[in-house]
Image 1 (cartoon, rainbow, N blue to C red):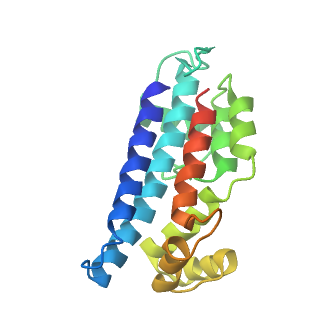
Image 2 (cartoon, one colour):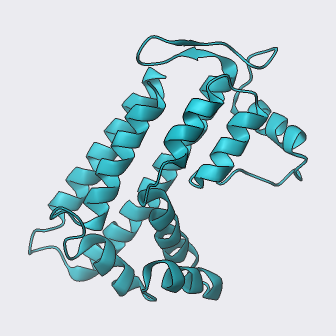
Length: 198
């Protein structure tokens, strides 16, 4: 599980540097907003890829960062596409279904369905109270789709309803311990990522 951890760490650092660079005064506001929107979408997508890699690696068998060997739960090693087909078959889902990896319940269900021997450990970490994945998903879905249902979910979940409001909420005023909400998401996701691969 070294590779997924290295990748998510790299991605989180790049997004942190990108956000830090946007505080320069000479950057036009439209560019700042577009870049911040992209950063939220990218963070969500990076997190989904990481969770998928951890679940798939667990099902295929791997060694954790701490050296614990996770035995394969499948008779043969499967690549991503074949693993997705196996999930669809085991969960009785239609051929167009894709797991929403940023929802902890879905990731836990997939790990359990694939019979990953560390599924209970993954469930403990993913089931812990985290704010980042849920808030990040709401913001990302609104920024990408900009539909009535995503706006309603955003208003219900975060109390904002426009692009400028969501970006101000995520990148503006301090959220916790003097960090912006985006900085807090980055820190929380890195801690959770490290706990998942132990």
